[in-house]
Image 1: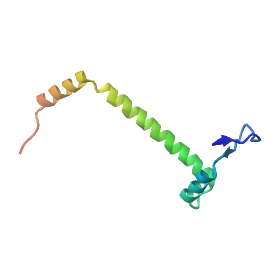
Image 2 (image 1 turned 90 degrees about the vertical axis):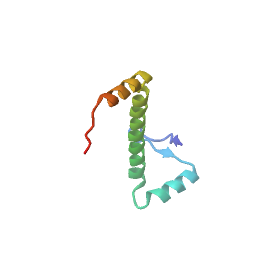
Image 3 (image 1 turned 30 degrees about the horizontal axis):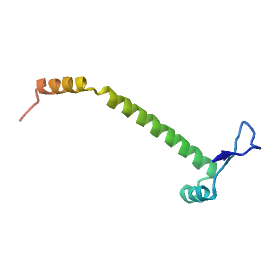
Image 4 (image 1 turned 90 degrees about the horizontal axis):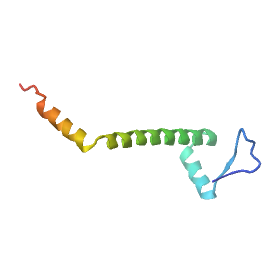
Length: 81
């Protein structure tokens, strides 16, 4: 994918290989190309933000935190009938 050389700075035009263009046409259905691509970009951005959040959460769950969680679980009473 490249930016067309004659594109104005405010609205750059990307070029795609034919194979990618064909896939894009199949996936977008009746949605205009520009709208579909913008939605794809926004979805990917949100997906990456969620992934970064979960990676930080997993990194924060250290063995010390795991041990503390187990102690709290054992000390917490639960209701029985």
